[in-house]
Image (cartoon, rainbow, N blue to C red; front, top):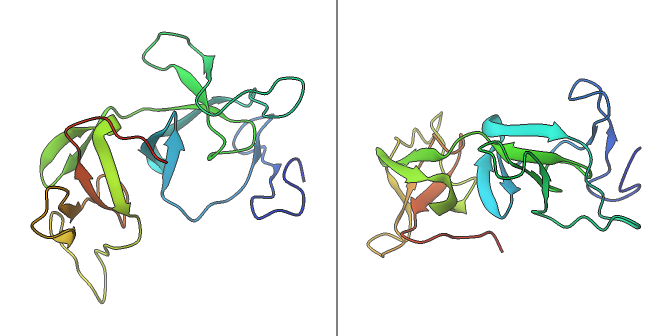
Length: 157
């Protein structure tokens, strides 16, 4: 155990991820990086240099690598207790239209299912039918995502 001993996100040394990785397994297919949704398949861990504890007190979303570059990394504690990461994708498809990753709003990450017994097709309404925030099965975001594209930046609360 390298972090969160005895807690739900207990982490272990994970040398397959990186030589210094301390990570935990999560069932979610979407992670939070700098306050925005990022599919796990698009997460790039730059390093394991972030530390929430004393004396560092690195906060979630703090720039930790490649400042000002397209691959700017952020302290991302949803990924691991020490992760510095970025999302490699800048756009995702929702109902066949491009949506900037910063505007993707996931209503439910377990509402859609392409397989048996549901066979929910890409783009089918899965939440808020007829409302301005009507959401659709969006498999480009995750294998089970119900999401919509907001016209303004949305952050995870």
